Length: 305
Image 1: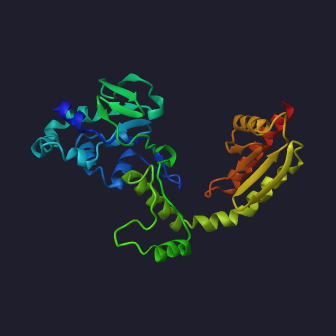
Image 2 (image 1 turned 120 degrees about the vertical axis):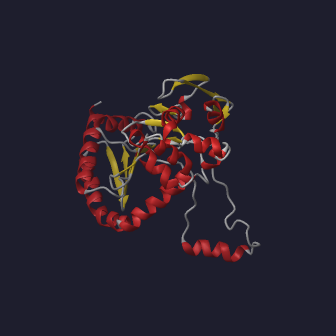
Image 3 (image 1 turned 135 degrees about the vertical axis):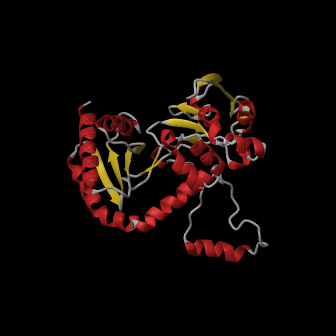
């Protein structure tokens, strides 16, 4: 029974805890329910009385079979597993597909033996750019839901651009309107997360909130102009750029400033000697104050180094 179940888990999904923009958690179970492609898995988790466990803090790595994978199991066998008297057996099977901690495909080098939550071992192997678990190929890896991050490929254009392409294409019905490919397309959990984010943006009026907050952010950003290592500060809306004075060679000042600011507790991207500061749209004034304070500390520490 257990061997059949393990072999059929081909679509891999790495689930951990997910955090919504409003601060409420979307745990593993909630994410699976929202995705709509893990109905049998959710039913099995409920039947095995593992809901509270997977709603815990974790982090966990769950090797999640889709409904299509479950459909390959004999229906009578599956129904029998879901019966109350087989709860412990089902729990053992499911926890065989859960690791304690976060495991990403990039963490795997060669062949490793991983201990599952139920104490048994899984053989995980990276080979020729692919990942295998007990010789089953991982079709979709690294769907990391911690902090709400799920890889998803989309193209966003203005409506007038979309209409112009659509009107001029004259393609037969059923062919792509904008022909292009995505690396991360068709992932149910990613699509569900994307729709949930759009819903939050609408309900909480995120764009207008960011527009109202942007003058406060820009004022805070430009308050750093007294720091001697800063050449210029520029920005628009909730995005800002700080150009650092070049040191020895291009990019050195930017990277060293990044490291000092990171140590001070603020993270951003540097491009050459320019620092890109782009707070989240859900920031409040207290968060912006903290960002500016830590930027000042990091840049000051850099200037002393």
